[in-house]
Amino acid sequence: NATGVDIAITVIGGEVTNGCPNGPRHETLTGVTFEEINLAKSSMAWIVDVLSQQYPGAHVIGAYPLKPDYPALALPAETVTIQFHLEPYDPGFYELPVTAVQSDAQETTTTLQVPVYLLESTIIQ
Image (cartoon, rainbow, N blue to C red; front, top):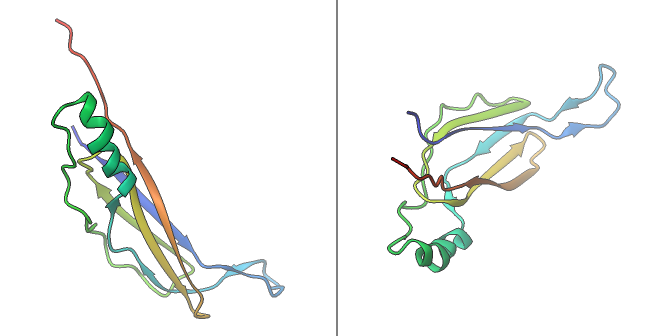
């Protein structure tokens, strides 16, 4: 059984709106950085304060930040996709900050959230 989740983050340069004759085009991305994954502080607090009451001994298992391993990005490009596999140890929201830089020097950072849930089951004999 494979555990975890495959994640794909697609970054697209901003739309150029100067009346291009062949339809809209996008700015070229010159840099895309994604370096770490963190379990949200609110999720850590939930594990310690709430989950541990229902499941004595529950605690944050993972060591954060996690460093994802993904292939080198082909830059410059109008579109970039970062793909990697995540095997989370803790339930909660994982925060993935992504920064994009365009050829016109505009830069933006967005923090994506990936929810991870516990799977609870009972075996009856």
